[in-house]
Length: 223
Image (cartoon, rainbow, N blue to C red; front, top):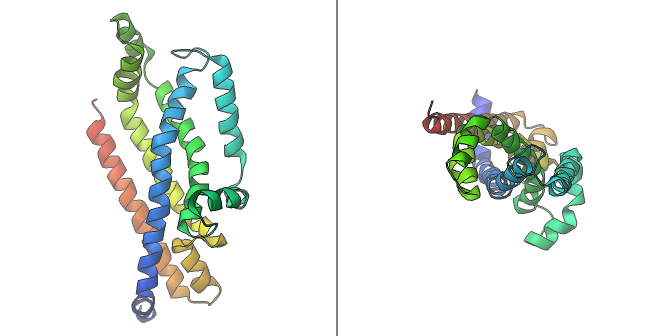
């Protein structure tokens, strides 16, 4: 225990900066999931055969792009996107560059989750809204998404907790954050206490994210 507290005192500023870097990476990633992954999931559902507004060709193209992006192992995606990251954020290393690769990984992943959440909405509710003369926009936003919102929040929470771990993987290639700190000190310099603190902080982040997401999902659930 003494070694742990000594490590906290000595490496506390580094641990704090690594935590902020991790929050930056995960925060930017989840914003991308919300702003791009959600509409993409809605598109995949509504344009699918048997969906609300079938568009087979559009659905085929969108589904193909999603499947291609999901097929890449994350560590390979990080390397492939180095030139693009440099173009977008001006650097190929650090948390900003990692956020670009994480966003490319999270968007198709979250889109598929949203698509499945929308499929779980009872078709009778949608048919009733359409029978009452609801417009396409109203049907999608005020009926379909509104009914699926608790499940979407749950999927968002699962995605966020998973990508906290992904951010640690990004640390293996110089992305910064808790993963990078754990490798540089805990692995290369045999500072086991630093690695323990990194694990503890990541555990706390995952737990807080899960608690907050579950609370929001319960508040939105009308059942």
